[in-house]
Length: 289
Image (cartoon, rainbow, N blue to C red; front, side, top):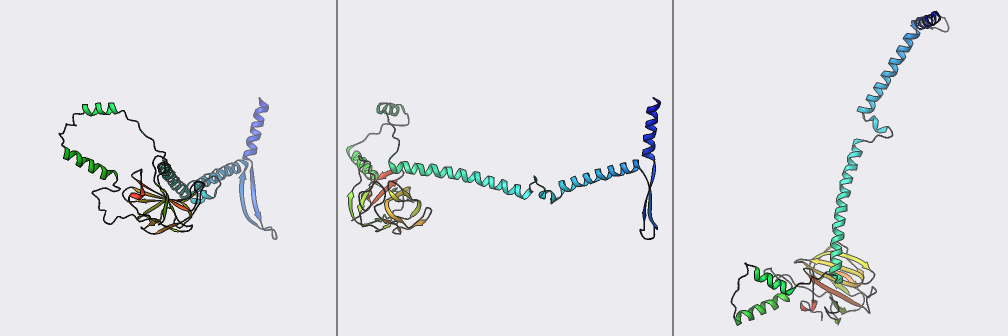
């Protein structure tokens, strides 16, 4: 026990033992500066200096732009740009998905892959009888003839009756002999007009080009969207003079005719007209001769 106390006193004496730090002139040995120190003072001063250095370093990194130069830290402007780019990317992905669906629906219409719905005639008649809003209206012979005439006109009418049709005329894309006509039974929803290779193909009406690309089966294809839900299609071209998104006028050259694609037997233009998602016979509205 006495030994332990003796050691503790010795250790305390070492900590409190005074030293003198002197700075001398090397040439004259003149004393320039002197300070009295103890080991305890040196330890306390070193600890305070280290803590202060760490504290001010943390403040410098946390509240000044210098932290951007330290690996692992990112700047606020970089985070802002990344957030904006993330929003833009998300919007572009959604827009791309909508465009894919739109072009897929157009492709189904053009290839005739349109789903049909089977109706039960008896159920429709029974539902009509039970509908209180439908009232029996007496008809006569003149009324029946008028209804039949109007139904035929509406069947082959390409545009709405109420619209102004005086300035909406369909121009022939090319002039030539029709080698194969419009045939619903064979699913040939177009007319094939025989023309020499590199004959200028013109837009049948004002519109916007929504498709202008190469396809394996039909070569270079151009699709134009017109007013009043009308779409015109031009296939087997040898070259395309317009790109997707271009706005064209009626009679403006959009491509050059050719004999491209696997589904062709000679130089001709495959021309289709679609109104409100249904194919129509182009010869009912355009004279190709």
